[in-house]
Length: 254
Image (cartoon, rainbow, N blue to C red; front, side):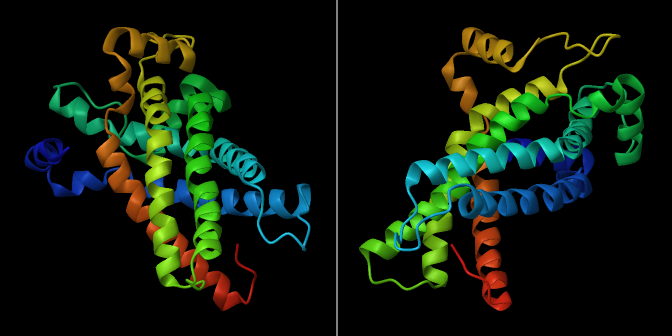
């Protein structure tokens, strides 16, 4: 990971480490808001927990996390596709290949011209699968870990509690989401034929089978360290910010 960062910085400049950040920012605006709202709505409207029961059942929390993550990712899949294409331009330059896109709008135009509106959701299936697993790790783990710590210790609902719960959430989310992230990236970034079909993988299942058969199970965890290093601070920042915003609004926390 460090070697890759040094190579990118040396060949293209340090700013290339943030290539695609505008697409990532737009994606998170949609994704993060949708998943939180959906998770809370499912908990409060679908399951309608008994007010006499203080703790929400783990299986219900897990179902809410999976559903919220899948739905939020499906909505934000177009921006995720554009982000991946922008981020892969650096690798193409290092290989001496001509650039495929020259910016966010150019990437959108080319995706639209080759695949239409359906092309914007290319790779959405592995994308949604990954998000379902990541949010099972993030949303569900944070919710369950926070309640578990409060139930078994005298720790109040404080910053320290939020840090501990979000640390658990980031680790579990990275562990569960890395295999799906590998599959998603390969499916979304593969070359296409004239009909918009993948030339290497026909589906996420096909990608999973070929990856394991040709490279072994360990290949599914390629990039785990950088994924965890991204998810851990993101989870910490997000949950502490979320708890503070909820507190300032006078709303009920989880």
